[in-house]
Length: 454
Image (cartoon, rainbow, N blue to C red; front, side, top):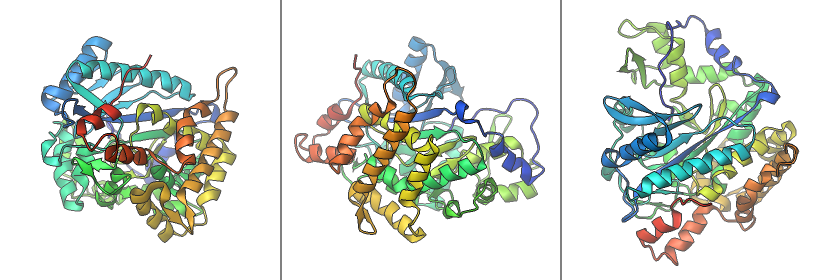
């Protein structure tokens, strides 16, 4: 979840619908200025027993050591160290202490790879000194909800009780799951909507290819991507697939209308977090609340609290992928860059999924959580569609090769090998869990822990 940044200067009042739309219009960038940004979440456990590391005495200490040793600037809230800030990058925490690197925006995955390798080196070094391991999984594997300490951010004190009112799995989403999100630029409204449509249409395929959360609460949970399933019963008003995206004439205005009718979480005034969960943004804008009127900053903050599979802000977020082992983590931004940065590749993605009816999309979305690449639509196994996606992405990445640099398609090699065999990361985890690991948590930790490689 995005780290809140206080508004600078005088607040700008919201006076017209055009202001809401212009937020997206002003973010359009010409093709030469497009970049890829990646957000990497990792679950942290005690290496000795696989239990979730608490914030107090654990994750907070990791942050402190990162600040002391590597020059990160501390971000403190109510006396607690809750985030770190760098130049164009940040390390933030999810509600259960999952550590997230919000990486810089790069024009190549090669640059992102160097950033990620340095990040892994830092967190593994800091963690090992404390007996902490960071795992390449999309889910806390051992600790139950009650065993995981809440990170003491003010926003979570509002979100947590609200989650219990609107779904049964919201606390699991907040405290146990981890993802990798890929952020894309767009050149125009048409380009943005095409990327939204193709991303939403292929969401189930991405989930299946990268499914990596088959173990939770110390046992197999019956899903390949339990993280993906959790989102289906977190908050129906702000999660999942968006049907209007598949309309031919979809526009920025349609996304604005959707966002206006999603219940809010909060607004921030002079450092105070005000509970707004009884208001949609449309109602707050029309009526105000406790003498407060809606501002542009409120709108921007509200957009960060919507969680569809593809999210529109000042860029497009692809949100369907479980967190990965280090050797597969960069396959996510590489795949997305190859698919979405070339117009004919983008159209090829859409061609692959455009014929499906809404009901079929929803059924596949849910089936992918349980069956991953073995799910089917119209008699076609997802593994076959996934192989086509990788072929399209390789074509796109090879075209984007710069000078003497190796093609960024190199980051797809491990993923390609898995998908060619009809397997996803969860298949590998399950096989080892039932086989050589003998359902031993310590072996699970040793087998999935991040390591520094030279």
